[in-house]
Image (cartoon, rainbow, N blue to C red; front, side):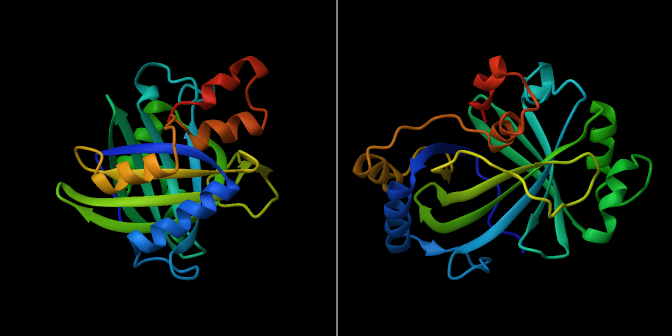
Length: 234
């Protein structure tokens, strides 16, 4: 499974459950379902392993670590995984991802091994990144088209963070993140399309920078109380 990917820009919103339900129904009228969805007509479960340095330089956005996140992503319980780098700079988002299998997951610790995910392993090694937490959530995804290209709407709910210390997915109980709220993301090319402008106006939405990784780190108590402001920045 590989849901529709790379978009140049994105807007994020934190919604209460009632508003999220209303936006979900709006999207089901205005947009088509993600053809890769497996949970009903437009949903699937996403699980990601996030990496950071010993000093959490990614979390604190120190130097070049502030612009890139490295993660391993899995959809539902499929044996196919994706190693990813998400790079954000001056409001633009770019992703690089490579498909691997669950059996290959240990290779991300070997920067010298010649395989498709070598670029990811080399960056983990160069940046001294280690597994920090697993973020899991249920996603609704709808797709559309605008005059400037494709667009995508997702709503994430039941977000759970679990600490990890090894490269591997865990079934251990985690900590709920953003309790009572859901995360809406609007992804598009160039300019906010008229359809999304109408959505924002109709539901009186206010965009904000949201990072599920940073919220997860804070929820797990991996940083001090004074650092909680860092969860707001994608």
